[in-house]
Image 1 (cartoon, rainbow, N blue to C red):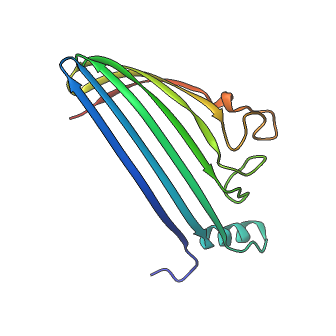
Image 2: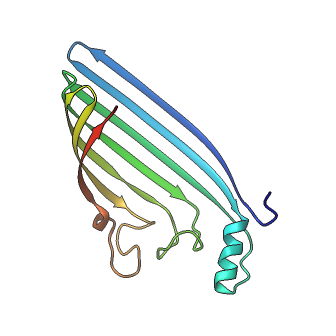
Length: 159
């Protein structure tokens, strides 16, 4: 049993998906929303010990939303577009940015090739419109949200 301070989280989430299959075509719509409340007694205590400060317990909220649409032709070639958005309370204890906010948003584009039922080759590109609360100079050193854009390729296999 823990006798020290703890961090407490309460999350509420909604998640949905709709799939339409007609002959050679598959279309999937998916979405999720998560709201998180946290009271961070343990995190504040650890910060105080490390920095010799007297920070009291901190609270925060974080909201995350994602939506995507996917299309596949003949269960072989396809892709998806996903939009994402995260917003929350400013908190310098948790977020290392100029404005101490978690706010980020963007789009991920993906192209897929499925040569067999259990294998997928994919290329995805994520573009950020906002990162850590800002579009430009989010870290005070000139970094922009677009500096975090990412191109990656991957192989997915299910056994």
